[in-house]
Amino acid sequence: MKALVFQGPGRTAWRDVPDPGMKDAADAVVRVDAVTICGTDLHIIKGDVPEVVPGRVLGHEAVGTVVETGGEVRTVRPGDRVLISCISACGRCRFCREAHYGQCRGGGGWVLGHTVDGTQAEYVRVPFADLSVHPLPAAVDSYDAVLLADIFPTSYEVGVLNGNVRPGDTVVVVGAGPIGLAAIATAQLYSPGRIVAVDPAQTRLAAARALGADATVGAAEEPEQFVEDLTDGLGADVVIEAVGLPESFETCTRMVRPGGRVANIGVHGKPATLHLEDLWIKDITITTGLVDTSSIPMLLRMTEAGRLPTSSLITHRFELGQMEEAYDVFSRAAETGALKVVLGGPQHNTLAIPTNPQYTRT
Image (cartoon, rainbow, N blue to C red; front, side, top):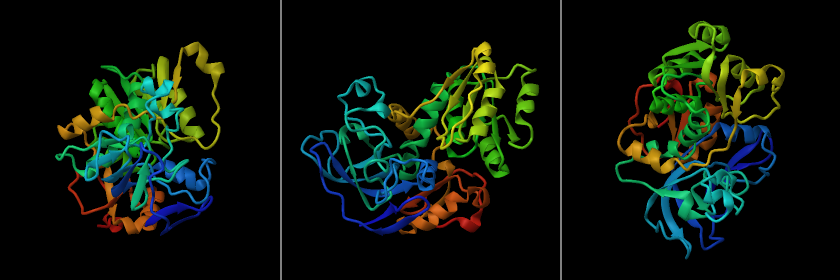
């Protein structure tokens, strides 16, 4: 089969690799029908995630069709259409029993495209299939479902829930990429008073407004002063960091009000300074986290009911064999206008979000 293989920092290749085989009775092998690229994949390619070794097939988000299951698998069977979670769960360890699947100590957690071969391939072996794949309702389109593998549960769990967004809150989302946009969409489930998006790209700020942000400000346009003026000098109740850079994290800590919450979602490849000399006296709560994906069943129900703008984040579509071209477009998002790039079958309808048609492939 063909797969996107990490070959060391700065190098990948779409090439032939052996078909995945069953290694455990709890495994399933899935044919990949739709797959997407994550900002974390770009961090891996830069060398920010040293656990990923050369030769690893990348990717951790996909929708596909089950082709084989082990003898212990009970919830799916060959022919079933499924969502593959970015997190695998053994179901037996302490953390899995608490639904903290991201911290699984039984061989799961974030393994796909990390410590085992991932989803950016024609086929993928999914460990612990009973808890790691989700049967899809017929009414849920593959392009809607694939965004529930990672970005929507990540934004919802690590951003909105960890940030404890409440009715009437002023919520600032720093970074209007896919994660930040999904945070804007899911924060609205809790009726905040207003949502402010911060990003350097005007196209992404336009996307944020299309998804429900009440105000937007460029990253170079004194966002801290903007938030201060908007809140009569108080600061935001919740600030969600969705970039993963030291300067963006530090900006978040300066925009939050006394007693407020900073929810860090971004994957950081470099240390950030934590100014405890300023933060302790303001009673600031800072949270971090790896997604557990325990919210996927609920998000699937909402998607089936048409309550989440999932595939509206997709700006570019490619055939699976165009993986290297898709990476190029996604990695140059400021130039190409890319939000979420999906590879797979035929084009599906999406909501109108500004994009650059020059780079759209079908």
